[in-house]
Amino acid sequence: MAYERAALSAACLDWLDRPDLHDRAIAATLTFRPYRDELNDRGVTRFRLNPLICQEAIRVFLRRLDTAAYGKDAIRRGRKLGAIPIREGGMGRGDKHLHYHAQLQVPEHESVAGWKLVAANEWSRIDWASQKQNCFRDVSDPNWLSYILKLRDKPDFQDSVDFVNLRIN
Image (cartoon, rainbow, N blue to C red):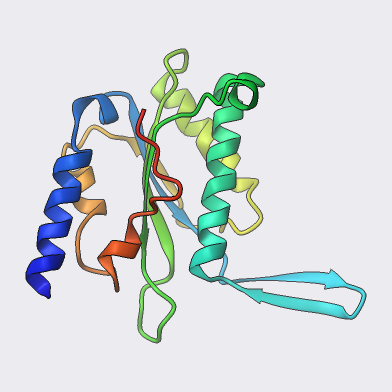
């Protein structure tokens, strides 16, 4: 079993480690609030964070980044930025808090420094986003993909790569 996990991790790294995917990219660590209270006609309902909520929050975040980069062309023509989102942590006792690491493409017409600010601003507008411990930086380290694809802190490696939100341009 450990061999299969290591082989799968290595295969993902080989597949995703291409210069065109990280020449102009930022590295992001995205954290979530553990729960959210919503007021309704019966009072307050508390919703707890789960992997599907995280996946939907990442989808909304990426859509906002597309709109920030391309305006209405993001919707009209389906223009999307590349993204490699990896889920880490879990929901069990003793697990790390559920969070994402991602490699996000920087649009051609933006600077890397400017895009980090845009990404941080867009993430802060997501309902489930935590305002603490988020990090946006340049992908200057060639080992960033190795780090986010590490086996540690991933209960099930196959489910940790968010294939629903994975975008390779």
